Amino acid sequence: MARAVGGDVVVKFLGEVVELRQELRATQGDVEGMAMGMVSMRSNMATMQSNMAVMQTNMAVMQSNMVAMQSNMAAMQTNMDSMMGNMETMMSTVESMIVGLRSVSGRMSRMEAHAGRMARLLTSMADSTQERFERVEKRLDDLEDKL
Image 1: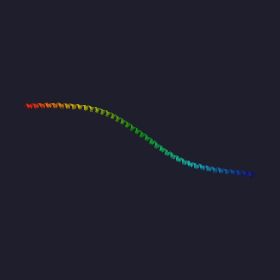
Image 2 (image 1 turned 120 degrees about the horizontal axis):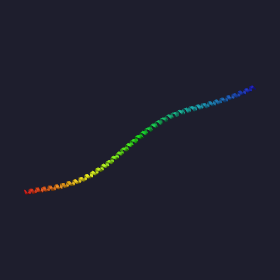
Image 3 (image 1 turned 180 degrees about the vertical axis):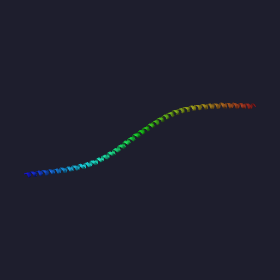
Image 4 (image 1 turned 60 degrees about the horizontal axis):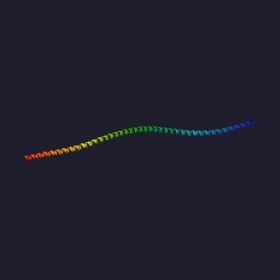
């Protein structure tokens, strides 16, 4: 009986060995699957790290572009302010020119009036001189006749 009991124990023991071997093989398969997953995950992590480096570079470029854009906008604002100042100066100059033109127009009107009066005076002087000349001529004729 001891032998039968010992045989049962050996059979049970061999059954446990078989089950242990199956568990080991299944565990080995799981570990191999996990190892392949780890390799895939490592590859994905490397790709992600590369993508993050590219993204960091792109963000640095974008930040640089934004700084340049801010600088350009500040320069544009300065130019616009300068242009507005120039336009205000130009408008002030135009207004001054209008005042000057009005003054010149007034002077031209007064000069025209003066020229008209001068023409009338010259006509009067010419008439008066002509009359005197005629009187002098008549006296000379009278004197010649007497002589």
